[in-house]
Length: 80
Image 1 (cartoon, rainbow, N blue to C red):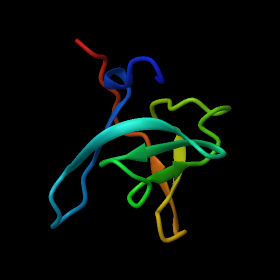
Image 2 (image 1 turned 90 degrees about the vertical axis):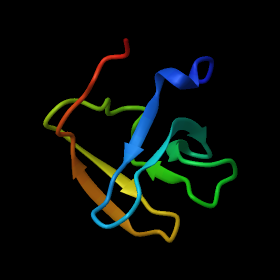
Image 3 (image 1 turned 120 degrees about the horizontal axis):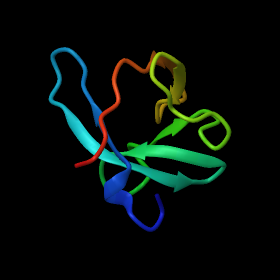
């Protein structure tokens, strides 16, 4: 991911908000989803280094304000 960030993209979509597109980045203490340069919008991904993202499993994101949000992985799409 560090050498080819375009291969680790993310899309954030909430009801009534525009979609955000970004990357998985190396962050202090692990990994994060980032949608623009700087750390202000980064969402830390809990234990991504030891828990791969798999269909049907859960990941926990920590919002920039510290709120933790669990998500179930509903789809994955290969590049290409």
